[in-house]
Length: 269
Image 1 (cartoon, rainbow, N blue to C red):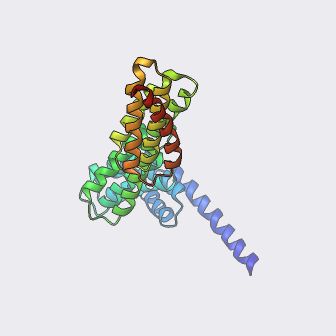
Image 2 (cartoon, rainbow, N blue to C red):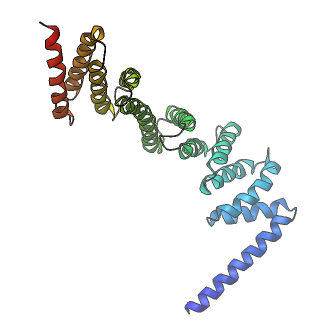
Image 3 (cartoon, rainbow, N blue to C red):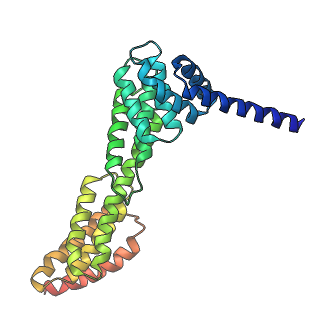
């Protein structure tokens, strides 16, 4: 029985392939439309996509055009061609803004750009684009069933951008352990990060490493700069403790503060 089923499945696949190749090569637009819909409904998005690419221009302005254009955009999404999916979903919305599929097109168009966002260490141009698309979707469809997922994706992308900024600042601080000249840009970078990202998950880390960089900067400064920079370091410590009174860094920060206060004693005499 199992062998019979496998044989029949093979025959069906071969027949489908034969039909697909035949329809693909002929000029019968209706036959291509019918077969594309058949493949799409069966989840065979790759073959559906190829047929839809051929016939989409033929259906512009026709009653079936809306359906063809949506299937085309979605088939790109389902086959993970997110560049084309994003582009085609946008075209669909411009052509059919009042479509019953407008919400889905808006969401999956934005999600296409989300899928193109690279890891945090790379250029974040696509992440910026995805955030704009997601925010536009959230603003346009605030009651959508996709709202929760859209917000989750937007938060994830925002955190990715925050991490990139944080890691750049931290890298300055790491290099500053060997090259004193990198400590000033490290402090500035942490200052900018803390100011620009008040709700970031990296805020506690940034406050601590700003204190760390400020302390190392002060301790390595010329005498005429040292007092002011030591006070800046102490202020950075107080900012950390105020925001995170039970910080995971508190024990280490307290030891570092002792060095700062010991140096400051010299200037109080």
